Length: 448
Ligand SMILES: [Zn+2]
Image 1 (tube, rainbow, N blue to C red):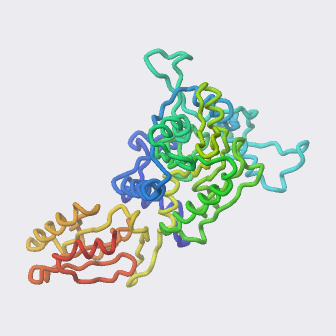
Image 2 (image 1 turned 135 degrees about the vertical axis):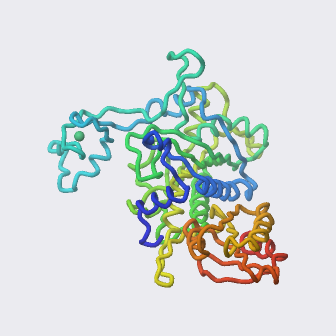
Image 3 (image 1 turned 45 degrees about the horizontal axis):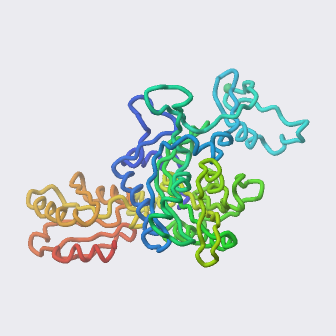
């Protein structure tokens, strides 16, 4: 990331160019929910596709799953979410704003921290008003299944995709005949009623996860944990995130979730500081053990070599699509001076770029439009493309640079006689002349 990227610039670019919109904006929006526009949905799909290719398609030990968002509520009893998935919440008695008590405490200047007996009295950061005592607030969204709204029909929107994979462990094992170690991958929406969503799309109430549950023989878990930490770190680097803004951090013992034996985070240096993109946890046999207990089913693996039944340990790489999208955008954003003008540019990896090729006739001249539209039709079956003939060609290049389009194809008056077009590359702005007959092959070499 260049130092030129700020969250404000990014939010403005995302809105102006149709990447991310505030949800239900015409009604004043709704906190913690965002809509992805025409370019945003392409970028998001490209991130998910790159992940799926790396963790499912290219591996011989992984399979996919798409479980339902609403599950039997006992799932959340067994997983511990009903009892412990909560944040301490305080309300301001004056302005009625709501805060996470743990976040307020963290923002008290270090000198104000004393021993418990002399702990500072926290005040509302907005108005200085008095705060209520902390209360625990469960982050799961509740709903009702069926026509009757009573305790028996309560259900929850899943707060993570992981449990869908644990409860389907037996189904997947039986139908795929996989041997340990093997994993299940899933991409899907998850919901958390965050007390304080924020930092644009970094912490949402509705978000999308990409999660893996990788089942291993107990005793081999530490080795596989290292494997996944390295694999996942490499994936971000391969997609172009700046190595100096990416780090892997092993969590301290007191930071670990109750089920975790060990956890690493892949973190990115956002303007608001180092923040988690992905957690890679060793969850041991906690989840399968709990679901076996609550369901009464046997969730074990029969090891033919040793003749023993084992409850596999689980390594879980878990990432959030929305915050990855934000990291890729921040990291790709750059500004540079070109002929006395500032050019904003997204140096996105070609696999992530929402539009791969833009087709630009030099002008709206009636002789240029038909061949330009023919070239556009030629490229559409192969890649996501855009056609743009509004305003001067220089401004159209800038518009494509700003949304990360790797290649522009220009049709000019020479095209009418030489049947060739110009390919212009985003980062170097270098141009090459290519016969239309070779255009698809030339672009395929650059893009595939
Ligand atoms: Zn207040």
